[in-house]
Length: 171
Length: 79
Image (tube, rainbow over all chains, first blue to last red; front, side):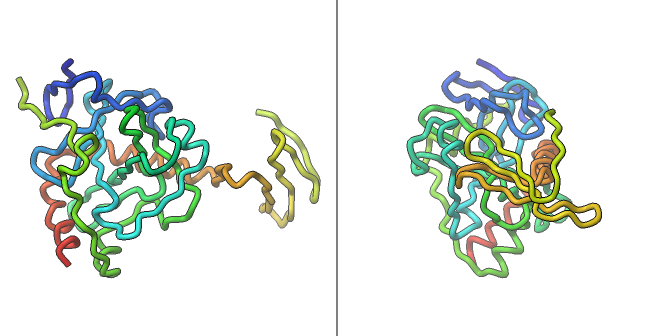
């Protein structure tokens, strides 16, 4: 199938690449189907693109890239709604809140990551109960001052999550 | 919306396991005590509204901004 996107033109998809958000995203509760697209210019960012609304897409990052000790605890409700037996089979990404003109001021939403059940292709934005700082965290500053090292996630090691599709040029 | 009036010290029970009690009233502020199972999510409503806001801002980011973000992030990884 082909979806239209405002940023990347037409994109070819297989139905099994679609992630279903049973409750949508906060503020976008009527959008249920999304797909993860790799950014063509970059290895780190991906886009959570709506299959239903071409203009809606969220830049996302994997938290392990910039947070050394990324430990969150999903509640039973979260796990049930994701049809997960345990947290181990989940994958997390974060929304980037904003990328202003100074890119070092970009912020990520640490309070409400998107959690994906890769096997079932379902996902949810889970508001974390534990306090992880502000929901818009400038991770560039935090990492620089904290001096934490993160291993770059090898792109090949999680093919089911990171790389859904190379974005095909507009037809 | 169910609207109930409570006095200081009185409680409201929700389902079998959630209780909300009025702990203190001082001027315009009400302090609430909430007993709930560990798994229950409890947030000030502003948290949800803030996340909604952030999602909405995030959805306006255009793809041309992404290349600018690479070097700051790579700088973090290399240190």
